Length: 286
Image (cartoon, rainbow, N blue to C red; front, side, top):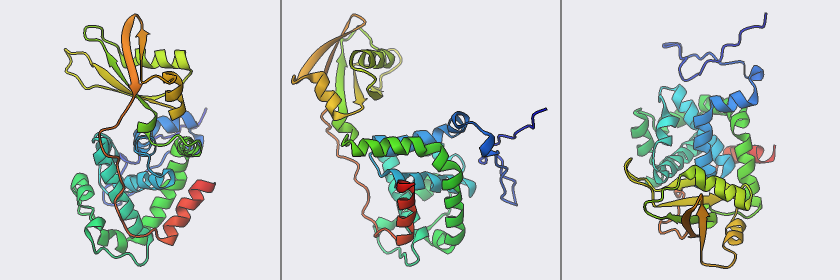
């Protein structure tokens, strides 16, 4: 008889008082199941590196930090952050980077508003502070590095490689490879129809689709279609400013998306400590 493998989520398996976790036997879990188990972590990482265009290695450490904070008692932190608007997720990530620099830098000094983590502290409903992180940095480094090895490297590696390859190919910010499509009122078009049309007509090129948020009794009238590259947008438009499609007999107009919102700049923080830079370098090169 095959030995039973306990596949227990560490977020739910805390033994109160002892602060211990029962971990699943990761080597016996298929990669597909491991990725499914960490779906929300993968979803957050995808938003960070593909939607917000943040550094892939640094963002992996951000996810590891959030997972460690969950172990400290910040329950459902990743899930709750994932439920926030993109601009807010970016701000949480900025504060997470401040935390990481505090942890990995022997000489970190919190002396400016750029080193504030008030949003993260309030959102996690905890008393976490930069002083706490720095005082417990030895344990934090050990735990975060272990999460990186045991969880993030396996669960997020494929997304990281995809993001880095996109950077090498010069695909740029998502806004630079997005099409804005509009639908005719009275002729609703679903996101599935849009994806199937683009993938069939132009090859598998749709990275994500953001439909207009509309009440249940109303149809979305527009959507943003993020494609695999800016070159694909140019190929579809073929020199035209605006083109007309027919998706299942329904007319759809498409053009290059022009962002009216500012990009998501990362916060100005202290220089990268060498120890953290070494961790990031090892992720990028391995």
